[in-house]
Amino acid sequence: MFELRLLCPEHRVEALSDALDALDALSVSVEDADAQTEHEHALFGEPGMPAPKEGWNRSRILALFQAHAVAQEAAELLQAQDFFEDCHVVGIVAVPDQDWVRLTQSQFAPVGITPTFWIVPTWHEPPSQAQQVIRLDPGLAFGTGTHPTTRMCLGWIAAHTQRGSRVLDYGCGSGILAIGAAKFGATDVVGVDIDDAAVSSTLLNAQANRVSIHAGQVEAAQGQFDTVVANILATPLKVLAPLLCAHVKPGGSLVLAGILERQAQELTDAYAAYCTLQVSDAQEGWVLMTARL
Image 1 (spheres, rainbow, N blue to C red):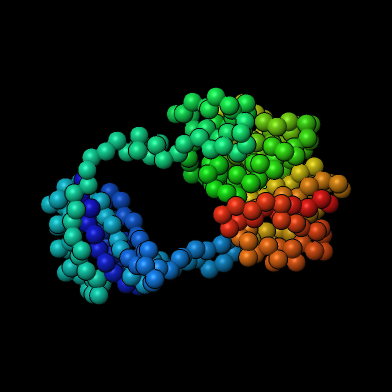
Image 2: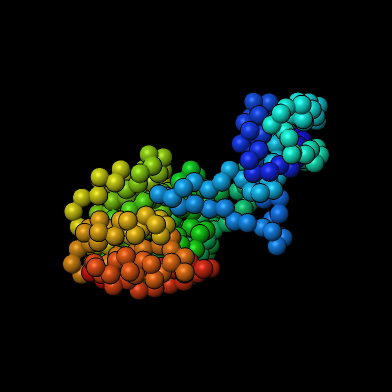
């Protein structure tokens, strides 16, 4: 394998990426050329907000090709195009052959939620101290247990889920929170998402973990629940305040995540008309906010 490395301004990223795809690059990725310097600039977006830019002010494009000659030909063809203006070929570098499946798997180790509750990929054996285990592999939908928001939600679920309770996982992603609720005794668990891939992932993961979960599009959330958990992002959580609170039974719990520490007051204000949110946990700059209705 050989990696063609290019340097370009942000406004050339899309054209170069499309051209590399047309030139049969095996993969194309874009990085911040100023990463780990004082000029580094984060790019991120939230649902309902404008999409982030295509790249950084100085973007590094990495394209993988099967052979050196193919990468060299691609570089020569690109340099002849008008849209290559202000762009540069940094070089072509040999990439060692690796067992990519094994390498990818090695990056996902079991994740401890509590000393006895673990998220374990299927290629690992559960730790000896694990009494409760969710089997989950990385996939198309968000939620593998590695992100602090997921860990905080699962920690709350492990500590507070009542046997026989009804739980709604709004924005279920991989279904990990819904599966956690079922594992800890909830008997009527519903997971909903706007993404069909997430719904499919939730059902498959529930089956693999031998728990029963109802999953579907957001309209599948009907009635009230003992617990409503939503691990999304701050902007949609603010918009969803009346809907999510309406799904919580009197005396039930609302559990919200995907919130940065600096956004906690915004969420408190957005939900003030319905409940009193409090920060229940914090990890790595993220907070878990909960309320009893």
